[in-house]
Length: 253
Image (cartoon, rainbow, N blue to C red):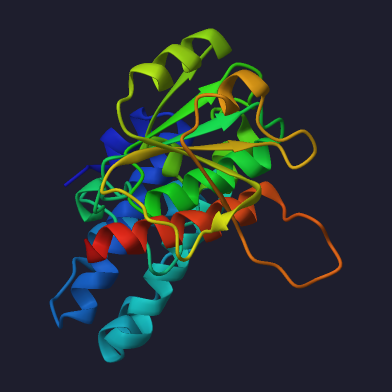
């Protein structure tokens, strides 16, 4: 149990995060019908600038108190820009629980995707659909960019990644010895393509597509069937659709 003195010794943002974790754990304890130490909780809650909980009312209505603690915990995470989704799986430190991931032997190559928003969104989908690693061709937005990190919702920390030059990427693809799939127009249907259990998939920008050098290394091409007025999809949306089909095929294999 972190003492009031110890919490005060921490930097403000670290203190908020620690208090948030304590409050969230105590909310879960109340849900399970356990008792909580209200004297302790009301000694640390003000350290985050929040009002103490009315102990008498909390003892009378633990369920309502549970919601107050969880609201407080979430408010602190919102201050930090790290509010979780209700359905996130987290470990004892409050981080995304990577043990929940079903990882397939599949690598994603992002060829010069300039938008941090798109890169972050692709990481979030990659976490959900079994991608083992993401290779970012030099010129792709850095996943550490604040916008990418925010859009990824923590998933740049759950999916392995590295930057490569175009030349390094070409050498990697040539030595991969597996299916190398380009997500491009004019390919086979993503839903019926004969995927192998492992492989590499390459995505280029919506405007320019995949570079000729990298495209020449691909052994297959898939496309998403469409029936609208637009000739292409946002790359993060297309990536999500493709990865779900790729993942589903692997899960059935």
